[in-house]
Length: 213
Image (cartoon, rainbow, N blue to C red; front, side, top):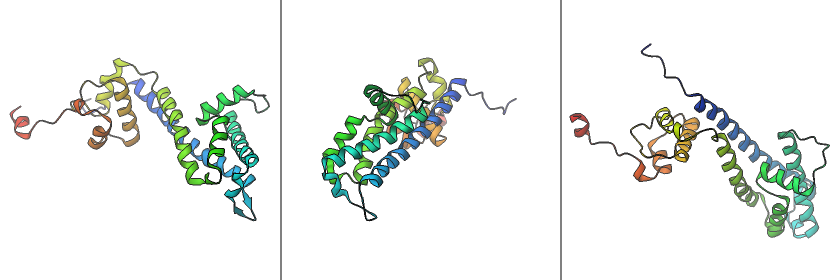
C-alpha cells in the first residue's frame, strides 16, 4: 500500500534493543556508584548522626572505606552476571569483575580514597565515578553495535532521516547517529553539527537553486 511504512531492517531493531539495555545498565551503574559510596559512609564516617569526613584522614579507615565499596560492587556484579554468591573469587577474578562492571578496580578505588582523604566528599566521588564510567560506557555501547557493519551504513542514514544531509559517513559515525535517533527520535541539526565533522555535513542548496531543480 502507498502509505505503508517501510520495513525497519532487523539489525536496526536489534541495535535499538541492545542500546536500550545499555542505557538501563549505565543508569543502574550510576545509581550503584552513589549507593556504594553511601554504604561506606554509613559504616565508617557517621559520628552522632552526622558525616565526619575527617575520619578519612586515617589510613585504616581509608582501607576499610574502599573495602566496603568494593564488596558492594562485587555483590551487585555477581547478581548482574549470575555468578554464584558462594563461589570464591581470587584477587584477579575480583579485579576483572569490578573492571567490567564498574570500570574500576579495588586497587584504583583504594588509591583514590587515600589520595583525597577528608576531601573525598560527594562532589569528588561524582567526578571520579563519572571518569571510571567512561570506559564502561564506551565498551557497552560498542557491544550494542557489534553486529553492525559497513554494508548497513546507507540504511542507517535513511532510517535516521539523514539522507542528503551527510556524506562519506563511516560506521562509527553512522552508529553514533543511530544512537542519537534511538534516544531523541530524530537527529537535530545542532546535534549533527556537534558529532559530525563539518566536511561530512552537506550544506543545503540556496532556495533559488532548489526551485530551479
